[in-house]
Image (tube, rainbow, N blue to C red):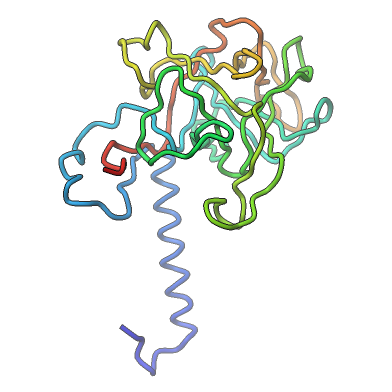
Length: 259
């Protein structure tokens, strides 16, 4: 319905911005508390799935990863390393509410995208796409800032063009095979024999090309400008420092998978 002619344009603009702000705050609240948002539209045939518990991690989920031993969340921010590659730094933080700890689970480098709600299998390859800076979790043969392991960074080889699925304002970025991580479920097929990555279940992340494991530890803690944050690195040996669990996030049910 068109607005009445007598309605001031300034009022319309204020109302539009107010509505947009309310929607943005609602989406952010859902991310922080871990609410699974419903799809924008749903077919009647999907109604049978609406009440199913969302117990698996799927591609396109936006998640936080919590380190099993320290409870710190995998984190990145627009702060470059002062040495090494000088790429965007990756750390772990104690706060569970920092939006810079949010990562979107994507398919491996050069792999075709899959439907929203498609569960990630144990042994599947993923990229973790940092929401706020549009770079991928990455490792390479570069010494970490402390210790003898490899540096872990957030990396983007180039920015998108803004067309198609590049994301808002062309922020989806491409990288290379150093962004690929294999999801290794704890136990033979996960703690309960699952063949898929389960929410809150223990997983290890192994870089696909180097075979190195994503770790963090309180043994390596930074000073300024990221005081109190722990170093994240890629180590050659699988161990307890490499165990992670999903925490807060936006998760999708099988109802989102196209029929």
